[in-house]
Image (tube, rainbow, N blue to C red):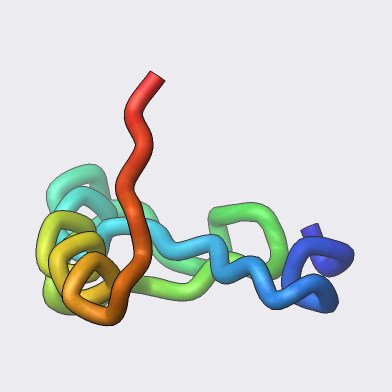
Length: 56
């Protein structure tokens, strides 16, 4: 996972989901950060900056 961060990729976990599931960052793979306001809010912030959200 560390290789991703070297390439500018941020791995964010939804803070709301982590709280609901009683999961901490220490329990996730190295390199994850918490989207404290929630995953949906983080996606909206990124989209407002010009990023695209692609769904399979």
